[in-house]
Image 1 (tube, one colour):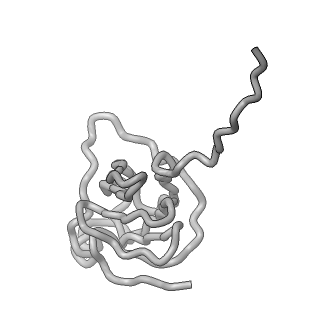
Image 2: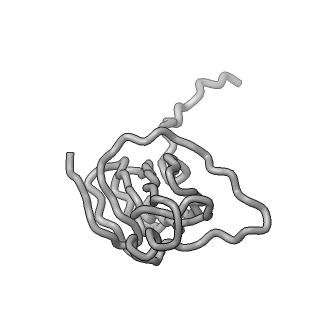
Length: 139
């Protein structure tokens, strides 16, 4: 397994998180993660990381907050810097790939809180595994 560290739209590493759908708090806008971990630590309680696994089709390119991310598998796992408890954060994910000579893409906003473990899938970009079979119709 390849392990990633550092931040480009998010910090990454190979962990196996459990999918969790974080609740959206009405009336509170989520924050993009742009602050350094040291600044978040100064703001309150001990920071907690969030783990995100992304399911990608083969040959798909992944972008987080419009930054291209190199991935070594179809299931890259990302770990955020430490986040302040009680706040809502988000990443904008985009997967792009070529299908039948045409560029296709899908975009998702992932909303989370400090300590969440979640999964996001771009299965909609996968080619259906159904083969067409000619029917023997008698007239």
